[in-house]
Image 1: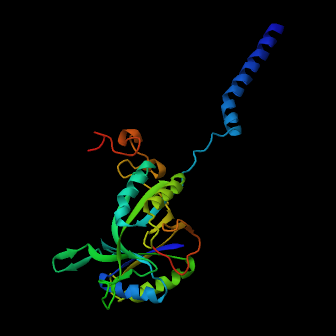
Image 2 (image 1 turned 45 degrees about the vertical axis):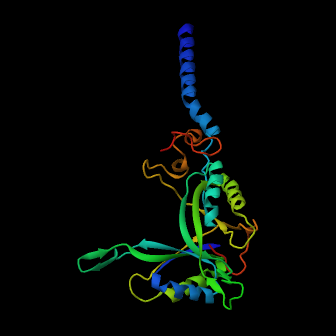
Image 3 (image 1 turned 120 degrees about the horizontal axis):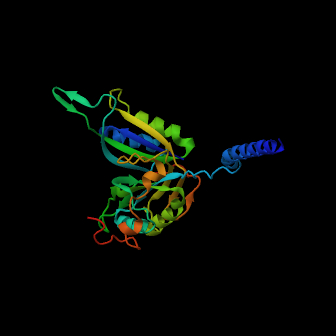
Length: 178
Length: 113
């Protein structure tokens, strides 16, 4: 009699333990929720720069691994409304150029890359004269890589490690690209 | 600060720029683009011209100047016909002048792309 009671108690105890063990992960998870994947903020860095400085700017951006860009040849003017100049030293009238050729470049990058990229752009483009250009930072709501359908920060990541595509200093490696 | 992108008729571009200048918005960037609108281009006889040449103007202005700039663009670009173009406004978080390296906190009169 005693032995069977003892057995019953043991069975109960084992059942309870099994139940406790079955719900334990849930409780633990509720107490320690897994860290949420931080959502990367995406920004567009839009630079309007001197055309002749574009290649240097591109090289500097590449070193920061901001390799993907869209660039466009544009015409523009600043607060000076273009430039005025004397064609010859003694000539009576000025020649007015209303729009100056500029290069507009857009990078879509993650938020931590914005500050170094802006620094690199300004460093590569500063001559100290009027017409060096401007850099704007714009918020980006979303990005989609069309080939795979990846969204946002995933869509910006390169498929191959950076070192395979580019050398350590941002110079293209032999055979890595056509 | 806001970025205003305006697609206007190429033949109206000078009028738009003049109107903007009167409104105090001097600096701008322009580019030639091709585009079409809700009418899917223009049908002339059997030919469909679905990529019409436009000029895209990019202007960055302070929030307070947005309404004046938009009104100036409208005044300069409006003919009342289809194809007058559209104006898009988006926000700009920061602007830097490369020459000085400073972040532009408050644009003087109007700033631009």
